[in-house]
Every structure is written in structure tokens, then in C-alpha cells.
Amino acid sequence: MRLYLASRSPRRRELLSQIGVAFDTVLFREDLRADPETDETPLAGEDAAVYVERITRAKAEHGQRIVRERRLLPRPVLAADTTLEFAGQIIGKPQNAADAANILRRLSGQSHRVLTGVTVAHEGRVEYLLSSSDVRFRPIEEDEIRHYVLTGEPLDKAGAYGIQGRAGLFVEHLSGSYTGVMGLPLCETGNLLKRFGWRF
Image 1 (tube, one colour):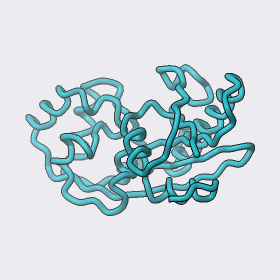
Image 2 (cartoon, rainbow, N blue to C red):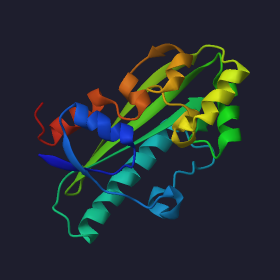
Image 3 (cartoon, rainbow, N blue to C red):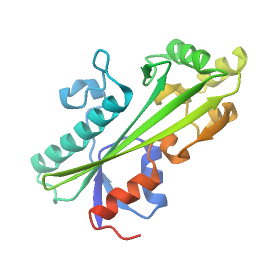
């Protein structure tokens, strides 16, 4: 069995490969805001859990449209989206290096919630699951923030960090799914795929 992954994320590709799922990627435009269907801008006052479900479902459904338009073999489309919630606010990907540094300063010594939604869409059927994890950072020194931002690692990641990279040094405590914080919760992903006939 094979599916389409509606994501550019190398981490999601690695995690799917880790559990033995064969896939092809369906790529959107480089700037997700270029397609109205996949615009990741939060709505005013939108709850983080509602936001991540809306975006994840939109990506899966848009991926299905691309499959039909390109006349590709009909297969399930898997999409995921990760966001952070801190102090009641949604924190997505930083806009630039200065924004990344500011986000990390806010998260330093604090706890935040990481929400990753996973959607599978196939032949008009759409199913969704949410992974929610609590992460606490130790206090991060200003030099550490500056050096980390200079690596470029935070710039394409929700919350301006990748737990699987150098930012693992900042994580004092994690309650939830490590792979969910990475961007694809394998337990929820496996459960969804089993509903569509996958066997592991």
C-alpha cells in the first residue's frame, strides 16, 4: 500500500519511512500562503486546537484536489500540521531570525503546548486525529539563543525550534509524543492509517 504525503517536511518523510509506510509527495507552492486553500494564517481569536484541525484538513483536501487534477493514481492523502500554544496564543513558524530569537526568549524557562494534527483523506472520506504534548524549556541563555538562531534550524519550524535537533538541549521535560513534537505523531498516524486498511 502506498499514500501521498502532502508535506515538504523532511522530518515527516523520515518518520513515515521509520514505520515502513511507502509514499510519494504531493507538493504545494513553496509559500503556503500562495494557495488560499493552505493559508496558515490564524483567524482572529481562533483556538489553537481548532486552528490546527482546520489547517490539517485543508492540506489533505487540497492534496486530494491536486491528485485529481494531475490524474495521479487514487491513493489516500496524508497531511499534518504542527503549532504551539503559549500563554493563550498560537505560535507558528518565525518570520525571520529576529522573530525566532524573540519566540525562544518567550519560551525560555516556561511550559508550552505542542499540537500536531494528522488527517487522511481518500475517496471523499476524511479522518482526523490530534496529538497534544506539553513541553517545558529550561532557562536559555542569550548566547545560546543567538548561536541556535545562527544555525538556521529554527526558521522553518513551528515555535522556532526542532526537538530532534540542537534544541533538544533546551527541553527539560516532555509529556506527550516526542514524534508529535517533531511534526508527525506516529501513534495517531498509525491508528488513522489502520482505519484505511494499513497493517503494521
